[in-house]
Length: 218
Ligand SMILES: NC(=O)c1ccc[n+]([C@@H]2O[C@H](COP(=O)([O-])OP(=O)(O)OC[C@H]3O[C@@H](n4cnc5c(N)ncnc54)[C@H](OP(=O)(O)O)[C@@H]3O)[C@@H](O)[C@H]2O)c1
Image (cartoon, rainbow, N blue to C red):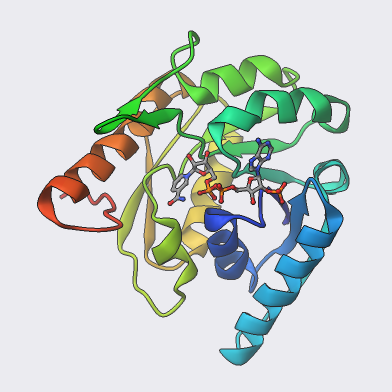
């Protein structure tokens, strides 16, 4: 599958690139091509040092990555996502877009700050063409742990989306990352519940002396 990771130069993009590299054709996408190329060099070096197979990985501008992708991973901060997508609209057609975007702010504690649509995922679906299928997932996966390939994550990943085939594809992609377990979380309207868990987990970690908490339902 051709996967374009927007914001693939950042914290959580790195983990996806490294964990999917053995099965998928990955494009690390950026607003600046030199950043994408630099990240690809680093990721390929990490994979090669661990003697891990890489199907294909390249770096490009966000525009080029979206145009050729089956799946676009939106791993950019909430504050920039609306303006970014509006600029990139002409490049979308029928891709699956995975939103792991969490709108939140920190005062004393982290707080979920959804837009008027109810969640980042619903806002993103409203911005994108109707032919694009938005699926919401991975909000509660720690970037640090995802990038440490030696770690067994053993997390559940709740996947929300209105298109059954697109949701099925994202659940399959989740299984491609060994030890992540996808769970069907219902339609995109349910995304707010799983987005809001992220600030809750961050507060829980601070209050109880943990770091990089994940979710497992038992
Ligand atoms: N970090 C985590 O543990 C974690 C866990 C679950 C979900 N998430 C969600 O994943 C998303 C990415 O998080 P992150 O921690 O990886 O973020 P990040 O490292 O701060 O940023 C990721 C990339 O986004 C691009 N970017 C930054 N500001 C931007 C803007 N204003 N407009 C457009 N692009 C911008 C940058 O790429 P270029 O400069 O190369 O374009 C940057 O490298 C967030 O929405 C977050 O809520 C994060």
